[in-house]
Amino acid sequence: MKRIRVAILVEDLYQDLEVWYPYYRLKEAGVEAFFVGTGRKESFTGKYGYPLTTRTAASSLKAASLNGIIIPGGFAPDFLRRDKATIRLVQQANRLGKIIGAICHAGWLLCSADILRGKTMTCFFAIRDDVIHAGARYVDREVVQDGNLVTARQPEDLPIFMRTFLKALGSPKIDKIGKVS
Image 1: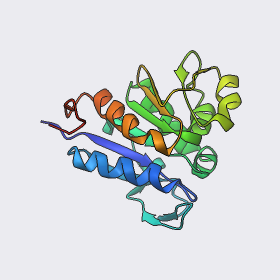
Image 2 (image 1 turned 180 degrees about the vertical axis):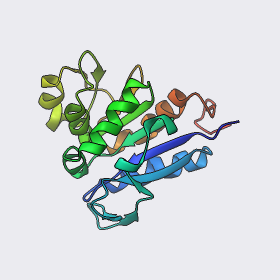
Image 3 (image 1 turned 90 degrees about the horizontal axis):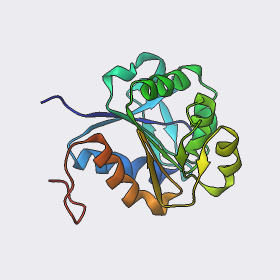
């Protein structure tokens, strides 16, 4: 059986919970989760000072080698959206139907990747206008799945976001109480 691979996109000032909660939930589910940066440097620091080291840069990664991408929020998406290779990776993943998870301010990167036209999504309320102007239909819900796109508003939505993201990956299966089986 082929291993499930998910890239978590990071840059400085990432929202710590939105990086580490998905990372450990994916690991718990047997998914190969790893950090991908812009290549500007190898180590990045979260909003609360927690450091992490990336495995690779977006420019060195092919979307075809992934099953999904998670884009955490914080201020990091504003840095990620400035990197052409990161934008291309998200666009390629979308074209290939890979599962793309976006939390909170991650919608900024989706706007720059121009993949929101006709999609229904949620995000942190402060960027609502940005995603609407990029062509999305905004709804205020904990989590929204529209095809291959899974979105959440804020850190408090992470449990349902991760259940939805893992289910969208197709495997592993999750039972009624949220445990991976």
